[in-house]
Length: 145
Image 1 (cartoon, rainbow, N blue to C red):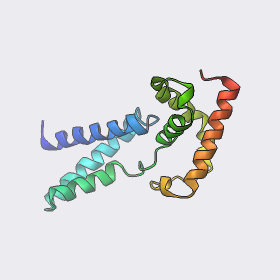
Image 2: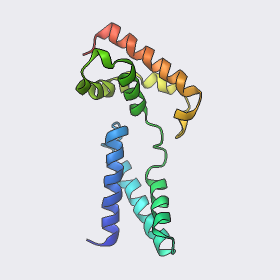
Image 3: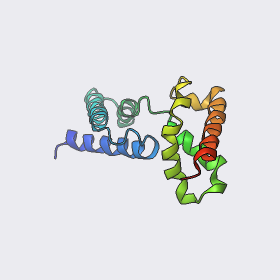
Image 4: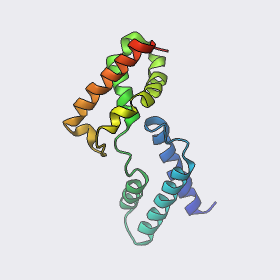
């Protein structure tokens, strides 16, 4: 296996890890994964060949690999479920329930301009409150499962 292929594998695995954890809705998007991994490997190689230090090469590749993935809808829903509804379900049910609520909350997210640093904005608290209400209403109408 050549160096470029190894780099591509490395970037693909790093991206997959993030997607499975924080962006489960993208974890099966092979076109997205292949494209981003390829771009990152190419950028790393180009930066390295241009004489950049390894740390800078990694920074450039990560910027491309993880661009636009700074704010996770799933992580936000999971945070709400863990903080607000953890007393009504077992710990092992929290993640599966949050996955289910992600589609329920899609319309709430549509009302916000979600940037990579959205969690640090004043609007995040409003989103958090809306998500909490949406999930509470869903539970009242449907039960937990």
